Amino acid sequence: MKRFIAVLAGLSLLSGCVTIKPSATWMYRGQPATAEQIAQSKQDCGWESDFSKLYDTYKKESLSKAEQINRTDQMLKQGMTCMATKGYSVKTVSGTDHSIKARLSMTAQEMNLVLPMFMGNAIVLDKLETGDKELRFKYTILNRKLSALAPHALTETMRPMLTRDNCHDLYPEQFITHHIPTVHIFRDKQGKEISSIKLFWEDCQPPLAHKVR
Image (cartoon, rainbow, N blue to C red):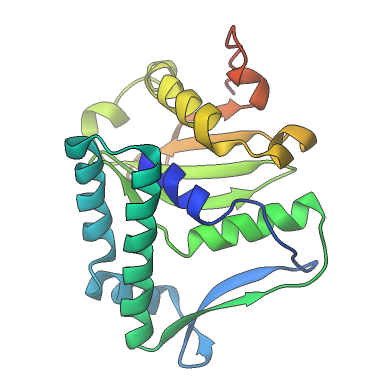
């Protein structure tokens, strides 16, 4: 999870100007890349395996947040460079719409460029989506024991980690100003939803008052 937070920090969450219909997409030799092309290129570039190794490095070396962000940024640049040599590039459409809805949409699209990403060996962050002024994180649980937990048990297992990382790293000023929650949806390998946890900025204030949905 900390690795993902570092990625968010490196991408400057919710910053900049975007259009009414913002977009950030992979292109292949001037044309929109297909999901199959993107997946194959990431595999050829060792994208997922490299990030998995990076996660292990964080744990073994007890890296500081600044060092984690720097390592993650380097890994992203290496992955982007590798994909560029294969003919891939990122096309971003920008403009002047500063609405929170448009900026949330751009944030999700930018993050989806580097997903899926392993959160350790048991969980994969598949994609981000935007709802009615909320940011949704969709995960797949790979560990059988974890995915077999009852919904309330999984919620109690994941909530402390999510709250800790959200409160320390994720919430920018815009989230607080616009009262935007993050929703974390956990699914099994068949895509069935197991648990959903909604967190607000207020949940970071002592005493913690978690809003779990």
